[in-house]
Every structure is written in structure tokens, then in C-alpha cells.
Image (cartoon, rainbow, N blue to C red; front, side, top):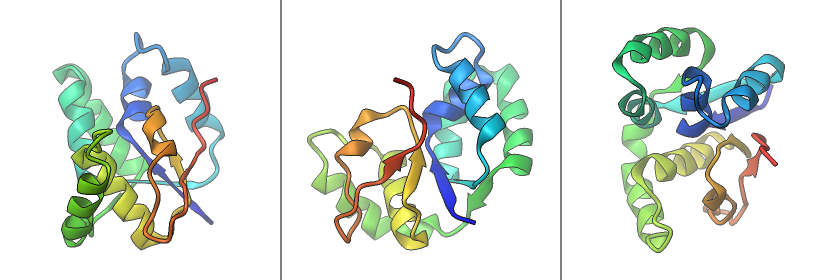
Length: 135
């Protein structure tokens, strides 16, 4: 079964009821049939943007609902390359880590609220398809 990489935006929206994309995040999670994959960099971003009372709820849920990639440390050189290439966006650490993870794992789909993922290209010049459509 193909995997979908998950960025921080939909995960934050899922656990923050006041978020503009909360309903979309709930619906997405109810209907997605693919394995959802993220990494510790994204999880750190999510927890830093959630209030402390929701952080443990998110982490408990993540251990059951997400595959958490363990190989991100090996992607550091590629992450730096991606951040340099897209410095004008700017490409932050979490975004670049997801692009590198997708390259390594051959993931072609991402769930994100960030429109600049339309600009990012993998090493083989492919665009990641955003499956978290909000429009």
C-alpha cells in the first residue's frame, strides 16, 4: 500500500479545534486508506505549536496512527541541500526533512497545508502530490 507523508499543518489542525482546517483534517483522517508517515522533526514542530494540554494527546495518537520514520538523521546532508536550493521560499527544516524522506522512501504524495510544496521537487525532479486539498 502506498504511503502518504504528513506535514505539521494537518496534524495541528486535527488537534486544535479552533484551527480553520480542523474539519478538513478530521475528514481526511476518516477517509484516508494509505499509511501515513512523518518524522520526529515534524512531530517536534507539531508539539511546539500545540498547547501543552494537547501535546500528549497528539503524541499518544501518533504512536497508533502514524508510521514514524526513524532514518531522518541519515538524510541530514540532503536536507541541507534542499534548504539551500529553496532558501528563497524559505524551505524550513521540517519541510526539507519531508522532501528528503519522500525521496528516500519513494513516497509521491503528501498531506500539507503549505502551498510551497508545489514548488519543491525531489532529486529526480518530481513534484509531490498534495492529497490534503482544502480548496
